Length: 98
Image (cartoon, rainbow, N blue to C red; front, side, top):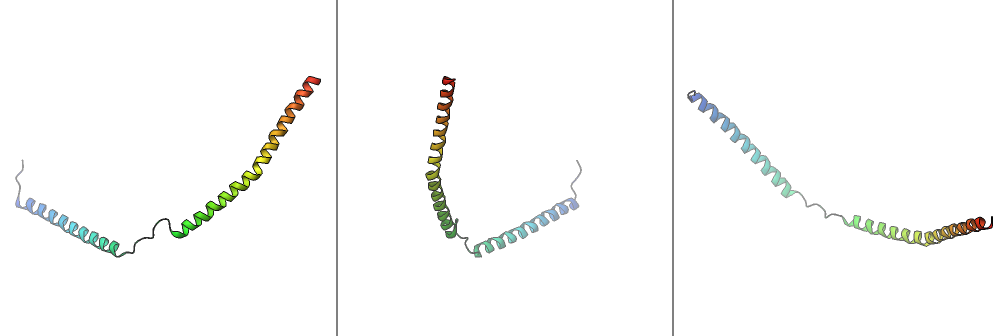
């Protein structure tokens, strides 16, 4: 193994000093960020009141739409089922009579 010289020790100390300086700069930057965050106003609660009102209006509109759909959908579906039944009866009658 090679011997450790005074120059090697000085090099290690210089590197450690530069690391210490960078850590100090990082701590200062983090302190500034923390201070800035503490000074910032608090964010609004989520969801905002306007969004809640808009959602309520939208839900009401959807419920009205569902009710309207239910009112016209049942008669149309019932009529289609009745027409299919009539067609089946007509086909069976035609087969038995021919």
